[in-house]
Amino acid sequence: MTKQEVQVAVDPVLLTIREDQLQVLLIVRRHEPCKGELSFPGGFLWSTDNDLDAAAARKLATETGLDTSDIHMEQLHAYGARDRDPRGRVVAVAYLAIQPSVSDHASDTEAGRPNWHPVASLLSGQVPLAFDHRRILADAVEAARRKLEHTTLATAFCPPRFTMADLRRVYEIVWGVGGLDPRNFHRKVLSTKGFVVATRAKRQQANGRPATLYRKASAQAVTLYPPMLRERY
Amino acid sequence: MTKQEVQVAVDPVLLTIREDQLQVLLIVRRHEPCKGELSFPGGFLWSTDNDLDAAAARKLATETGLDTSDIHMEQLHAYGARDRDPRGRVVAVAYLAIQPSVSDHASDTEAGRPNWHPVASLLSGQVPLAFDHRRILADAVEAARRKLEHTTLATAFCPPRFTMADLRRVYEIVWGVGGLDPRNFHRKVLSTKGFVVATRAKRQQANGRPATLYRKASAQAVTLYPPMLRERY
DNA sequence: TCAAAAGTGTTAGTCTTACACCCATGG
DNA sequence: CCATGGGTGTAAGACTAACACTTTTGA
Image (tube, rainbow over all chains, first blue to last red):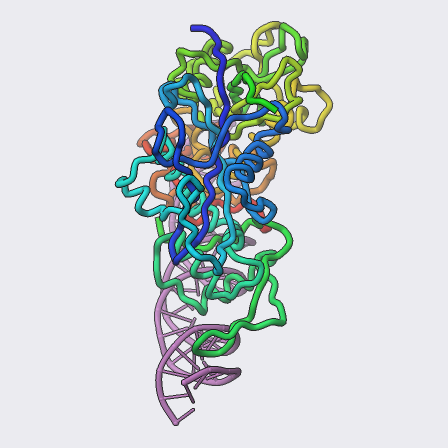
């Protein structure tokens, strides 16, 4: 019945697209509690962190060694259920983080290092996640899906130069749907100011006409009106 | 450079419509820091609180004596800047809370009790608010405005029985606009399933045809598609 | 010349907007 | 019967969805 000493943790949910799947970066916990289970590369707030955003960026950088400069980050939700951590009261502030997909990499599956995991298999519930991280992951994925409808966030999943087909694949993979009409999608994206900018370069693939390469417009997370339609409610 | 003992506060931003204005419930702080300034009726997380939502509801109930059962509450954002509270590291979790407008009340302006304040004058910056509460208020109001576009949240501002004109006034007051077309608004609301349900009762005002009374549909916060349009971006 | 992917044009249908018009009530 | 606000009908324009069609390349 008294006010309580609390720990505050930041938990970045880092999503990317790899191997044509939505994947999330997880570490294997090396200490109790939940030792051996998968969790986000998060950690506790430090006195040197200027704010929560800085803490999340710091954790992501130190735990993963990634360059956070081209990672999109935004706060999602705070979780503070009494029993969510056996060590005591821990309030976790979850962040949605998005890493551009990188085409060139061998699968660097090192033990003890953070690794990418397909979101679909984690959410279906086979693999156990630490604490309430499955719930947080589900919320983060749903937030990303909604944001794709209403903002230009999809470009955060794309490398510096990308084609319309690349961008369309982001929508299809994150939403888990197939068959967005390439022609209507193309028009819709170009008609939204502040979404993408055409470059003079083209990319040639195995077959077909070369595709124009685009880059994200400078302003991030522009509101889409009308929204990109996912389905009818 | 070490992890830190932190206090977690919950800060409910309770909005309502009074006197044809968007108003927020604030208390006068009785202790340092920021003694004498206005703040949300928040407080620290207790060990007995099952989660953050419960803590916010408890605070609202004990600080204000209001019946929280018909108050809509949802989490907004966590604020954790290092210097936001001089006592030490305090992470505040802000809640958007909405109280139905009550038509019958004398203005109970008691000293030391929570009081309603027009949001417009607070945001314009004349009156000082404690800590970063002006920023939090601005974020809460913007969140409420966005939610009105995309969800049926507007009914949370309405008493159990209300007319279309009442609901339309909610949009006009919260958005700070005038002149939504009553006829198109009427059709739009009725065409959205899960928004309002007509009752058999009517309400007669001074002039004109009696208006049908509606009640909120059972499901709260249904997504509006297409959204209620605020303006073109 | 063919297959394949990029990109444009077009048409039917839906939703928004603006406004004419009817309905129901008190004075 | 008139003023006032509630509520319905409707036509012009905007946007979506579906798809025929043209363009540009490698093989």
